[in-house]
Length: 313
Length: 313
Image (tube, rainbow over the protein chains, first blue to last red):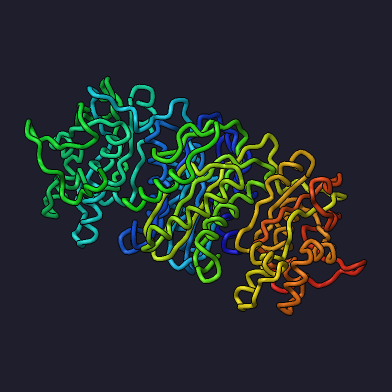
């Protein structure tokens, strides 16, 4: 309990409470919010040894990504993040370590423009951070609205995060700008909030890319009961020169990482009208057919990527 | 991911989505809610080996209390629970075990009258369940409104949960009705939602009892900058015959368990007007003086209970 108070005091003192929508922040039984609906609401967890290790990311990185990965779901609904709750489970961890986590969370909260309004600390054998984010939007963007004839649009450098993690795991020096971009994509993912807001009233459906582009597009295909055909080269291009450079260093196929890497926190939206003005690039089409994802190179359908869990379809 | 889908499918199939305030439930990036504000919002975690062990509680109990303990904070704001998110971290756990947790969560969600609208599953070395609850109220009941002259009122059988846990830990048979009530108080805590709603517009302040009556009243005393004088015998009486019987079996002082046992999920409210019609009993008074808790027996001040962390004041 004393540690919970220290943690909450740390959150309160360093992050504070901002915004006209927070009536009561950290320090009571609940936060109190005055938010106009409709509301979108999500929860996500980062677990040591599963989502991160302290050897590959700083505690500030871990705090940062605990917030931004959860917020990616809010971005995928075309919503504006309104407030954040953070729940920490930790073994004995000293004040400096807690401070580092809080510092990373503060950076992330500032980036996404939403205050941390409360939290919880519990003892436990392993470090984990579970974050809940509340957002607001007049027009929530669901997964189930894609229709035949829509384009499939992508915002965000898919493949870079998985490439960055692989570089770290294999101890490959990543000082070069393009490799460093991949490492940063994994350590400090950025939710596509502005992109989601920009297309909220135009897109027919959207999903964020956390499991991997092909797997998450399969979720959208299932929810909308459509076939999605993705263009392999467009997906690779979305990873940019950083993905190409990292794949050269790793000896990996950029298509595998772009389609199945995961942890991209990119945003896929489907739309009958172009979304290029919002920064999205066209990576595929919705066609008639059963719920599935197909990969096309030129006019040929090709095998799905290595590492893609077909059971997910 | 496949396990997450199974878990979420389980939540969705067995708990479903109820209520006119849920626009989108389990299965999209976020739940979508149409809730009139103000909103209250909290998060709490239950960790294996810290808050429970499988030797002392069933997985259904663990699922149940993951929901009700988090909801107690909503009750303490005088609010109505509106919706629940559940985030599970688990080592390899089989489908029957997941089903048992979900069954307990379903029972709890039904009891409190709020749907589970989403969730998350992650792998991890130890089992933990982190639950976030959203509530609604026109008049949030804070901790900082207690004033000199207010009575201190309690709803809920303090001490019973700690007594029940002690009975289980010491392997004392608890078939007798009164001992079984204590075991049930620990395994299946019930948030005081109706009580909180009943006093929301009359009470000056409120807090729920999770750390222990004296410690939580100290939080209220600090937030309100008042001295709270608790009546020892009234606190013991609040534990009822079940607390008395369990303390006889355990050889423990009922006052210690009533004041410092914890995990009661009782509700303390302060008020200038009586709250007896809402089921509360008078256990103390707000007086002038520095922020602190004093314990009175008759006209004498007595030492604070064993096990009370004075650092909390």
